[in-house]
Structure formats: structure tokens, C-alpha cells
Image (cartoon, rainbow, N blue to C red; front, side):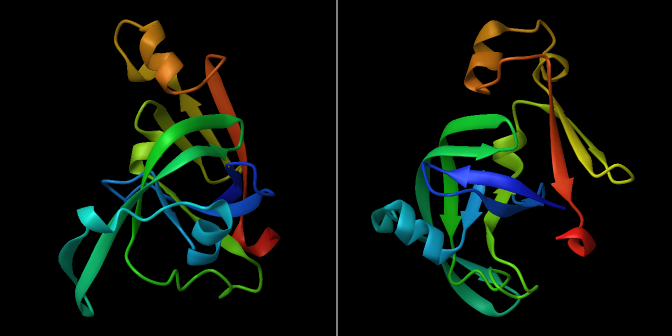
Length: 152
């Protein structure tokens, strides 16, 4: 699934939903990182191993990231080289929103209606105000209308 999001004050762009991206809330295309003026934290880089061999993983922080009507601040991001899907499908993908972006929510993916339901109340047992404030949310359930590949 992809949906409309925004990095800082840049124009909206399509972002891929990757709940399997653990350890980060965002993985942005290099063009978006540069345009947003996001600084890679090279001094915190680590090396990892992937299917193609060794890769360098560099963290960064997205000061403001929104996806649908959810706005988050200081979202951790990971850069591990070029984002191969940026222009692969005939439209521009600005990056991915990952597990850490959705962490404060109970998330329901409705593939039939192409919606994502994000409920901060259900994610915490005592409906803590501070958790909802950290999630940057202002109502019980945020509904994100997302796009199917065939509809984009």
C-alpha cells in the first residue's frame, strides 16, 4: 500500500507502507533527504549484512513526518543506499513509513477498502494522554485512505 505523506514542509508525496521496517519510522529516498535538508548521522553509522553483501546503515532524524492525518516529530530514519523503488513504478515514491512510525497505534490494514485505521487508545491499556500526545494525534481513530498500485 502507498499513501500520501509529507516530510517537513515539502510538497506531499506517496510513501510506501512497510510495517516490517523495524528500527526506523522512515526510509526516505535520497532525493527527499537532500531536498528536506536532513543530515545523515555518519558518526553513528553501522555495517550490516544483507542479501547483496555488506551495507552501511546511517541513521537520521526526520523532524516532522506526516502520513495521512497523522503527524509525528523526530521520527528515526535509516539510510542504506539508493531507494530503488523511487521511480520504478511510473510514479514517484518519496520513501517508506515503517514500524516505528506506527508503534504508538493499534493498526488495522483494510485491503478491501484500501484504508489504514490507527487507534492510539487501543494501543495503550490505560489510554494514557502522554502516549496519545507523543503519537501526535488529536482524535480516537485516524483513518488513512491509501492508494492501490493499480489506482496510482
